Length: 186
Image (cartoon, rainbow, N blue to C red; front, side, top):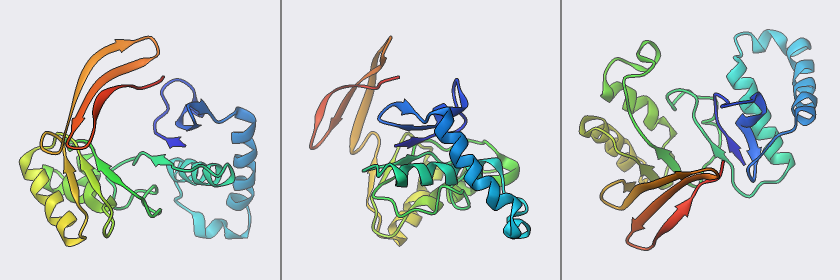
């Protein structure tokens, strides 16, 4: 399963399994289940719940009911306090660190890196993309403190974009244990 936000074309695109978006009917049925929670006795405890938090819960619920083997959960903003950060992952990844959402995450690369590094879990591998050294220092400190081995872009693996095709993107991938040409699907 894949959960990503925001959606690219249609709102059902943000929740998919094996490249197929959740159906509108299934999403509406899940939303109806959650609506009863939001209108019931527990509503006072749910004040301030965001749309992103609700759609994240729907995605987890959908993936569990469909018994997916693996779910890729894209963090909405930051990581430490993000609603996707409730699972026990088998792998975490931080692709980039930029000066985005500075009002909420901090106004330096180091502060934002600390927020994003909140997804790092004890003993779970971490894959990092091309990240500025000052942000990587923060990530490395947190990963080391949690005994999370880091696989670094440029050191442990290389990815080179080859071409864009109608069905997706084509990449060359090289690491110490594997190399090859891979294609994403749209």
